[in-house]
Amino acid sequence: MPSTSEGRSRPRTTLGSESIIDAALRLARQPDPAGMSFRALGRELGADPTAVYRHFRDRNELVEAALDRLMFDVVAAVPADAPWRDRLRAVASGYLDAVVAHPVVGVEAAHRTTGGPGERAMLELLLAALTDAGLSPAQVARYYPLLAGYAASMAAAQAAHRLQDDRGLEASERAWVTTQTLLDAELYPTAVALRDQVSRLRDADVFRSGLELLLDAVEAATET
Amino acid sequence: MPSTSEGRSRPRTTLGSESIIDAALRLARQPDPAGMSFRALGRELGADPTAVYRHFRDRNELVEAALDRLMFDVVAAVPADAPWRDRLRAVASGYLDAVVAHPVVGVEAAHRTTGGPGERAMLELLLAALTDAGLSPAQVARYYPLLAGYAASMAAAQAAHRLQDDRGLEASERAWVTTQTLLDAELYPTAVALRDQVSRLRDADVFRSGLELLLDAVEAATET
DNA sequence: ACCTGAACACCGTTCAAGT
DNA sequence: ACCTGAACACCGTTCAAGT
Image (cartoon, rainbow over all chains, first blue to last red; front, side, top):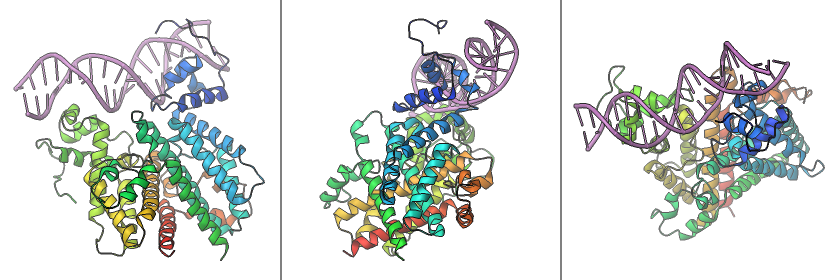
């Protein structure tokens, strides 16, 4: 490393948590698993990598802050006056898009709890929508973890899938459950129809159809 | 289960892919994210860490082999003559248990495709069960990716959750979707019932109830 | 033929030193 | 008060050298 300040324009505003999160999310968009390292972050910020430690205790805290910001923006984009089912659909697919668009942060979305305003806003939205649907508190307690867990884990899996094959873009075009095993298998030699249909499946389609089944279950629960 | 483990002394048989996988899975049981490093593996095998490269091209290949072995054993434990719904329940919960019991390998389960005999056996089981349920090939093509994706991503998320808080055992006792946010929130001050119920939720319960909803959907699809 | 071990290019993180 | 940069203890992986 040459001693700083050559070439390169200088972002070099005073460092703040928000600008660090911005930079982290910018790096997280690229499908490079190691793209959001502290060293890359320092380069992006025009500061020493370790300066980030002034604002976040460790990597964990930074990732959670970035994730919380994604959630906050997703919730903000959901029309508040839409029917409950539309609201849930909107928040779920917005969340999926955000997580997949920032795969480096997104892979951590499945199991992390941020404790921040974004998470709280999303929680509020979920609980309110389920209550508006007509569920009792006991029913909300049953369906809310299921919906949240489904969306979080499926989205993270898709982000991880996208991170994995940088190589075969065609491969990541297909749904991640679509093993090559299935596609070339003599396993189901007669079921050509099955192979054709599965090979056309996209990750987002799988996500959506599962979500609709869960929402159907919510709707059915209100009718008893 | 393989019976070839002889206490503490010296594993040091001639290195083979199978014994390496055994050792890797042994290390993967411990809830230490970095526990399955090549260096730890070398120690466990009584060999130089890099000797593993003689048998697996890289870490990716090793993880896939270990995962495939888990799947193979899970499928082998499913009674082949049970009704289709019982078979699917058995394979799903066996898979969840295996993945959560080997969290270091399990976290990778969501998005990986092994292409091995274990994966093929599991695929065969799934397709056969759905066909036995009465689904058409087109319906199988719709529900199979959903079931596989659901189980894979939820199981991986639970494994990741278990890896994360080594610290608060009580925290990982609770379902991972259960934010502290919800538990101490003034958010729903009236809904004490909701908080109480959610705080009693376990990860495995969430997994199971979602699975049953999906299986209900499969069953309903056969009646049209 | 198979294993070894030094070496390489990375990580996240700490901390004494600078300004 | 805030940032720097060397240093530490790790990674996965490569490759020339050993047996």
